[in-house]
Length: 183
Image 1 (cartoon, rainbow, N blue to C red):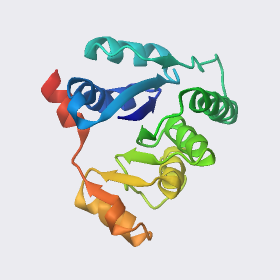
Image 2 (tube, helix red, strand yellow):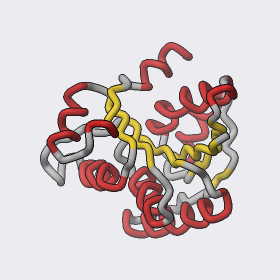
Image 3 (spheres, rainbow, N blue to C red):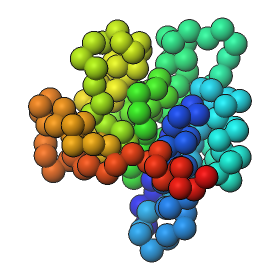
């Protein structure tokens, strides 16, 4: 059995990763044991989604602070996720999208040489300031990810143009559709 840490902290991440959490939890024969770690980047909105899906996190880093800056959040997230990884020792980490949580968790995992799976990989605007800071978050996350789960062929083609090995890119569709079916 391999331990898969799903790390997220915002409402959009929860909406798109909770269906994966539920699928892994309901299918132990797949050989993957999910472990949910939330950062609480968007505390109240995150908790609402977790309640809808009935997902209780295994770890909660509670990183949200009033009036936080991107730099302070990123520093706390990298440090908090690093400590979590040190304690939990997952075989792989899964992040979603383009948030500060996704970028920070991917970076902390890379530092610990833990493979990273990136859900919703390959989305690009081509303008590093639009959307800000999401475009840079998603590009950097892709640079350290080992497995790229692209929602569309267009997103997969973006990754291939950037030099990602074809065998590491998987067109999976968008997990928000799974969330809609669940709701």
